[in-house]
Amino acid sequence: METSTSAQLWDALAHLAAGRLDQAESCCLEGLAAGECHAIPPPPSGECVNTYRCRVLVRCGALAAHAGLRYEAEDCYRKALLLAERIWDPCHEEVASICHRLALLAEGWEDGDALLTFAHRAYQIRCGLFGPTHPLTAAARTGVAVVLQAKGEYTRAGETFVHALGLFDRHYLTIDTTPAAQESLDDYVICLRGASVYLISNGRALDAREFSSRALHAFALMLGKRHPPTRQLRAEHESIARAAAHQQSRSHSFPAWNWWRLLSFSR
Image 1: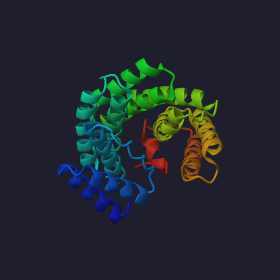
Image 2: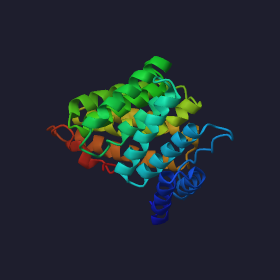
Image 3: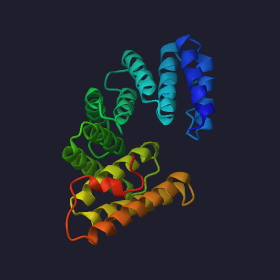
Image 4: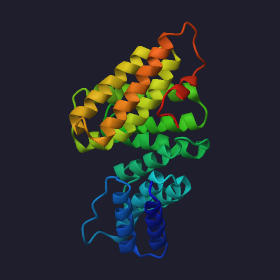
């Protein structure tokens, strides 16, 4: 992440604190563009100030998360959630989306306890709205697994990753191009990483490689073979294949999750 992007983030947060919503919006979108993220279009004119502020806070949180500023991102998302709960129904998808964003902040951290409630809430809302097999529900399930992993509950996390990956795999076999499918692509990759480590560590290397192969096929058809996320997934597929080959060449098994060190995309 470029230094200028982080500077724009801080400018956006400062504008928000001072109530300068238009300036915060501008800094956020500039920072997102500089960071090669997908900018969210500005809200329509006439939108209520609280709705506008909520969505600007979410954009600032997303930018902070991409910049590696985890605590700043959490602060933005928590403030956005308080507004969202006043604006919309407590079971609204926008509430679920913010809860899911909070859950994903646990990735790579060890203080997931405070975020587990958000992960479960996102899952329950989406399950109620869309059903248990929808890609957004699978994404929320991934959020639960991310928090469990941060808490050190590796077996439960692995099982949850595998369950969510099965939902993603089942859904993307149809190569769905709806907005919900596009929105859950990042979660699909997070889920694939976590599930692959768990599968390989439990002697199911071929399953991990097969899931990865199908995910790569779906990304190539949906986004194109040269699209950056597809290229990144191809590199990760190669890492999974190498780890699988390494496991198959060994007569002994490794302790669970030690395979994480063999995968080049580990953090």
